[in-house]
Image (cartoon, rainbow, N blue to C red; front, side):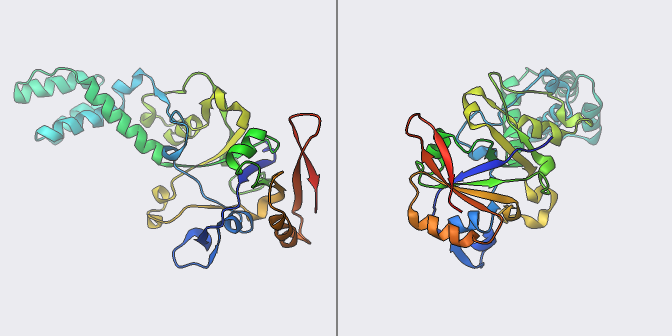
Length: 292
C-alpha cells in the first residue's frame, strides 16, 4: 500500500528539552527537536484523549482461551496451594471453568459459584496492559483541515510538517485508521492464535476508531513498546527519527513572522519546501502559498 504524504500538526513550544530525549544531552528548544531534528515521540493509547481509543471487544472464545486458563490458575493461587498437576489439568482442559470447579470440589470441598465479575476485572486489567504495550504516532492525510489547525497547532499559530514515509524503515507499520460506529471485535482466544499473530491482531485493533473522528483522516505508526523487544531500553524515551523524510513545512495562517524567517533560513538550500497557510476570502477554506 502506498502511503500518501502525511502531516503532523504542532505548535511552537519554547520549552527546553534534551536532544534525542536522553538525560544529559544537549539542551535545545522543543519545537526545534520536532522540526529540525525530526523526532516524533510515540504515545501509549492509555494517554489518548478519546477514552474509546484502542478499546476493542473480546468475543466469547475468551472463556476457553489460554488467557482464561491462566486467569483461573491465578485465582486458585491467591487462596490455595496449586499443584503442578492441577495447573496442567487446567491448561489442557476443553472446558476450563468446569475443570476449575472440579478441582475446588475434589481438593477443598468447595462448591464454585461463577465469578464473572472477577474474571471480567482480570480481563480489563489485561486489556490495559495490552494497550500500554503499544506505542503509536498519529498523522493526518490532510494539511488543510481548519479543525486540525485549531486543535493541534495552537489555533493556527503553529506549523504542520509533511512527511514522505514510503521508503522509511517504518513503512510496513504505517496504516490508515478505519472509522466505524461499532467497536472492533477481537477473538477472545487471540493469545492462542498463530496466524495472524496476537501482535498483528492488536495492531489491527489499534487502527479502529469512532467515525466521529473521521475528519482527521488519520494514519498511524503502530509498534510494540521498545523495552518489550529490548529490555535494556527500560526507562528510555522512545522516538522515531523522521528528519530524512520531511518534505515540506506549513506555517499556520496566524503564525508569527519571526518563526517564518528562522525556518526559511534553516531550510534554505535544501529540498524541504516552506509554505504559509492563507485564509480564502470567499469561503471557509485554507490554501497554501509557497514562500520558499
